[in-house]
Length: 128
Image (cartoon, rainbow, N blue to C red; front, side):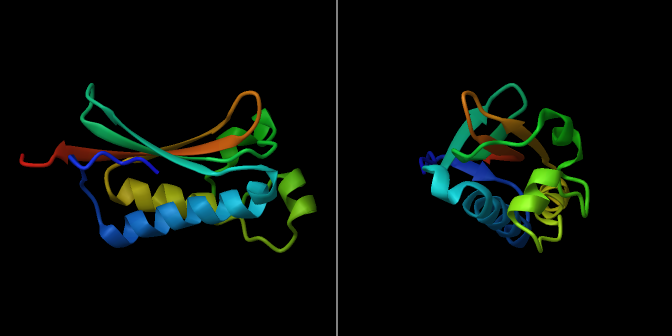
């Protein structure tokens, strides 16, 4: 993890903790054996936002499922087959938690392989 010291995220600590822990848990569950899981951060000056990305090295998800991933109780066919018993709430909890902090969430397949959850938080620079 590489997080610059001068970044300050505005939001509820419990919501942020819930979102990040769910993203990490999903990465471990669905792709933990496929390679490293990375947490990356960045600052987007255009809208004064901090980006926090959890990126795994797994197989990703079918493109057609991407728009539904953050809907409550949605589980794609492959996820159901490989990991029976899940509730389909992990990514919905992430979205709800980040939206409560005024942010947003995007899920994407990485190239050539992997999956990422990007959480975007409103922020300020330390000292503001």
